[in-house]
Image 1 (cartoon, rainbow, N blue to C red):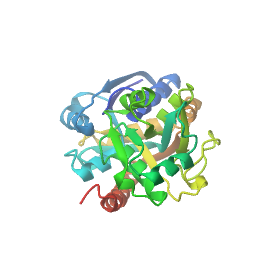
Image 2 (cartoon, helix red, strand yellow; image 1 turned 45 degrees about the horizontal axis):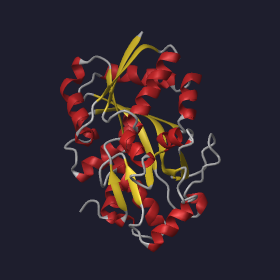
Image 3 (cartoon, rainbow, N blue to C red; image 1 turned 90 degrees about the horizontal axis):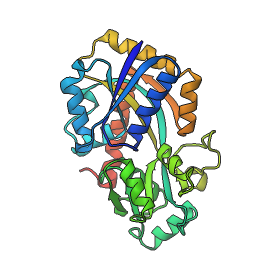
Image 4 (cartoon, rainbow, N blue to C red; image 1 turned 180 degrees about the vertical axis):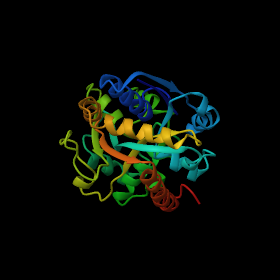
Length: 297
């Protein structure tokens, strides 16, 4: 029986953490694994975990790192000295979407309300995210504001170290809005503490038809954040194949479907070669977008 160890490049409560623990839960409940363990390793915008995977991944047995679009973004900005090329892409697992969320007592009832405020002064709202300036939460918020015909690069963005701290910033009233992944947003909204104004899915999500997409509100933009698994760079081909077979089985189980739907995710299972091609395509798209927004030269 497999023993699976997940390396998480951020602190508890963020999207990487939720994804790793959701995958581990489904592996164990479905009987595909009898021991899933988790290691949170914050620091360096995810760079510390990538360095650790490269350095000692082959001594840790079945260790896989969870990562997502920031592995591309942070390499482009130079925030992290590594890219997806320095590790071995195994498979993308899910698509998550951006969400914009406010406290339940916020005067902003809709995304249109937020846009009305931003039209008065694009820096009038404090928008938090669980990652640095110029990284994904910032980029997605800037994209959404751009779609309203405003200067997204000028928003007042407050960075926190990982999603858990950003949520605390919102709920304590330090900031007025949170730009985060839908799975994290659902967790706070379903507790009654906050309200989701809009999401960046290209179309309505079947499990959450009540959540408006930016497109459905007349703002012509969408953004998909994949989350996937990476191994150390020299992992043997037969081990890669084992992983692919394991996750191919997992994604067909009802235990996985329960985790996926609870988090508002969509399946996005693309294995090594296709996954790597997707990463290259996304890198080009993001380079163009980030240059346009002034995040990179």
